Image 1 (cartoon, rainbow, N blue to C red):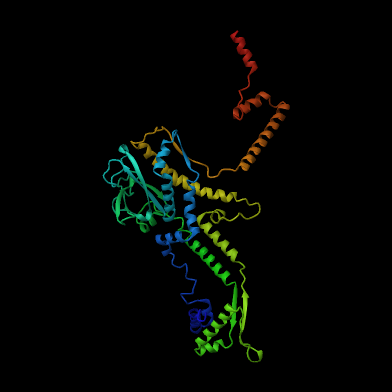
Image 2 (cartoon, helix red, strand yellow):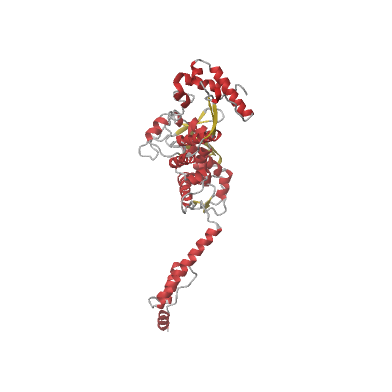
Length: 458
């Protein structure tokens, strides 16, 4: 084990000699040890490859991107008006759920994505607009993230009265197999936009792709890096919670004399003895006075938990995620049930459903119905309805049912009191219940009106 720390000890000793004990111990002015420069290069952190690396390596980053994309369709949806599920069968054939989830994931990661429609519509090339009047069959859906797209210069819509004025007519899409580009007309793409950005940034920084916006990790990149760093340093603190301190007599004089080898050898022997025998033999000095000393200090971890929680809170502040949803922690505070946190996360998922999933589904369903090969009934009206994100448990349903029954009981007691006091009649109570439709009742019979009608007929 001798010489195990030669490299490290040599570096520390050199630091001591060049800059004194202070800088040698703290690492300041030493690029290999200085931790104050970790987050200075903010521009480089926004590059797509660094975002990809963070998504690949950080579980927290992956949850921020994946959770809303997965949960947006986790409960499923139904198409009102699709009586025999003919539309649903076509969407299943095209694996629409998987493709939309994939598009949502890359849109959240990179700030945009598209679904490319591969169709049989009589066109010889993807550069032609999709012809819905002669759409024979939708054969496949392919997903591309926004980093695979570029906008050809000068090929935009030029009619100032049109809704798509100044928008690109075509996109060049990078092939995942060859790396080359092929041109696609914009009508063949279903777009998933990132979070909004100023047009100036979209035009100058993102190659003019009009729907490219902020990704889910762009605003919280540094917070995630700090959290990962805090967790890594916490692990190191646990490893060094018990720190051995070896006080060597005459250390300064030995370093000044250039006797680094003697110092390193002496430290190695102490470390070897500590590791093998769990015993340290040191020089006590002449007559037992002075000399070396060896002690183990137990370092405090006070404040580490608070620092980690603060890092988690910073990430949640940047993303809008509740701490309980993102990190799986239990709700804290008096009478805290976590219901507000759950509702907050569901608002994020609901936003994804309304702004991304629903328009994509409506576009796909319209194209499915336009297929010549579509054999099902084409409903006159249809609508996409998402299943509830949260379903109450049996206990919660029973509690809600009990609360409704108690409310009705209170209303009935009030009505009885009014009827007894002569403020209302039983027929008026019955008429009110019939009007509200809470019971299968017929309207009360007006006996006076019925007698008058009978007299007229007679």
